[in-house]
Image (tube, rainbow, N blue to C red; front, side, top):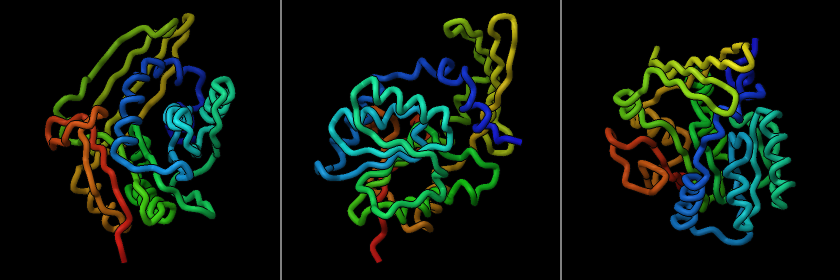
Length: 247
């Protein structure tokens, strides 16, 4: 039986439902990172869980050498097509972000826009951090962008209904067993289909503990894509800039 993200990300409707994602917000986040992290022209960037390549292409626009990794061949096809149409050079590989390996290390590694916490087993989720520690250059930065647990618990919207192009999208959200679960019903051309999203809800303290256990430390934190300071209660995002611990 396929995992929820294997089924959902392979569907024709996924990109339509998430078409509203704010490109200007993504550009602001890219610019924030470039202002915060000093990158050289020869430095390479790795995006683990790149999806359809939105952030990969934004960094490629600035001339950086970027590699995107994702498990969804469907989304990678979209990313490759968009790169070709835009005249941008980027590498897209299908792989498991927990275990993929390279013969080189990267100056900047990204895991952003909640591309984490999909597995039911905590140990499987946190394998990402151990793999990042192996892939990150000694002077590199790992950017981890995730949900802020306390904010989500306080501000979760239980239900929403909207029409996106020709699809009526009904979403019901709940927190169950420390996971944010979203049931998605799509109605299109008289037929309906159903999908589920399920993401583990980890506290700030838990994430820091597992980063440290994996040999990573936090050097800076933001609470949103504008670069505002992180607040444990009011920040919608938990954005951590991490380096490798020195032996």
